[in-house]
Image (cartoon, rainbow, N blue to C red; front, side, top):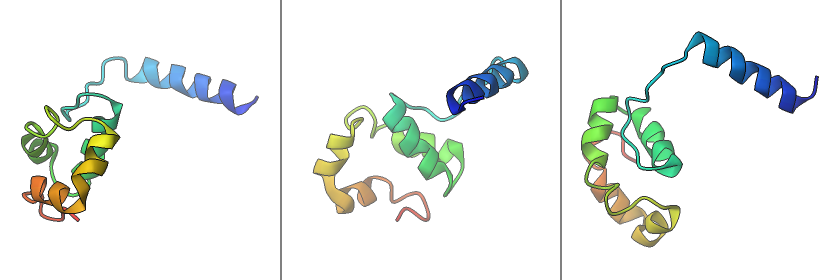
Length: 84
């Protein structure tokens, strides 16, 4: 079995086991979901949602974060205890 078929089989099994899983992290697209997941490793999902609710309206693409730069991003997420 090649890796594509194996991945499809795993996906099918997971969909049967967990048919209606919702993501508690608020996100706008897959990029913002990735950012939220990374931040959630540092605090609760609720805190991440509170911090990002005003960020994702304006910044939701990788290019946005590149233009912001590290210092401005840190300022936006500083309420997360280990934000660096």
